[in-house]
Amino acid sequence: MRRTNEERSRATRHDLVEAARGLFAEHGYAGTSLAQIAAAAGTTTGAVYHHWENKQELFHAVVEQVHADLHRVLPARSGGTGTPADRLKASGSLFLRRCADPAVGRILLVDGPSVLGQEKWRNLDEQWWRGPAVALLREAGGPEELAVALLGSLTALGQEIAHDPRPVRIRRCQQVYRTLVDAVSVQVS
Image (cartoon, rainbow, N blue to C red; front, side):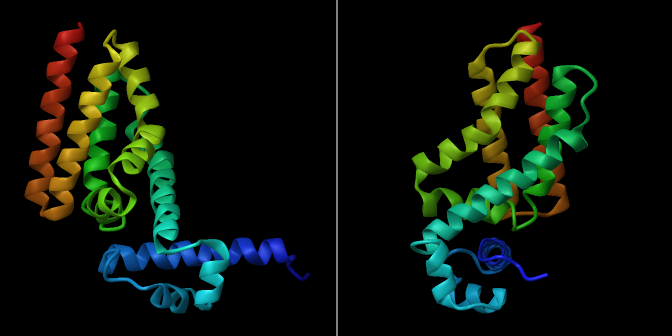
């Protein structure tokens, strides 16, 4: 059965985002051209421009995909049982491990702020993560500002890991985050 134009367009868009994600992770935003992305996706730069106005818009689509993938994985893998503090520590530790992967750390935390601009990048981050963090802290009796502080600490620690993904660095950053969550837990108890 032949695919419709809409199905072909969706498939091309998907292939371009996947190719861009791999190239941005390996070479960074500045080191990746639209021609390289098109070639990796098996299409033309014209197809890229059919879907996005420029490389920055394509990068934005890749950032959205990375957030969506993390959003699917983190709650499922961090477990829905235990105290809010346990769940915060589990999801935060998993996020920090994921930051060692350039497809997460480099795209979201290294290139993301400079390519998208601080305000757009922060708005995307909050769109995906502020709600779940606030809900967990409210469940524990804590104010919304603590969620913002924990998200900020995860971002800073994730950036450290993205720049230095050695296992010892990941473990240290995870321990720092768990210590912060424990300190917050004492404050709201």
